[in-house]
Length: 54
Image 1 (tube, one colour):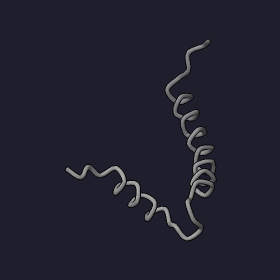
Image 2 (tube, rainbow, N blue to C red):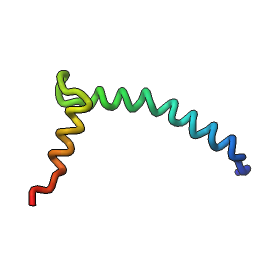
Image 3 (cartoon, helix red, strand yellow):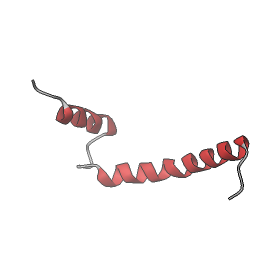
């Protein structure tokens, strides 16, 4: 496997994140518990679920 230059690695990283954005949005939409639950509310519910009640 030929070594990549720093610019080639950066270009590959940008391309990967460009593809990740729409996929992430589709995943969020598909995993929302209800149509009325916003992303912010979902994060709050997750934080409350993970909170340690000691």
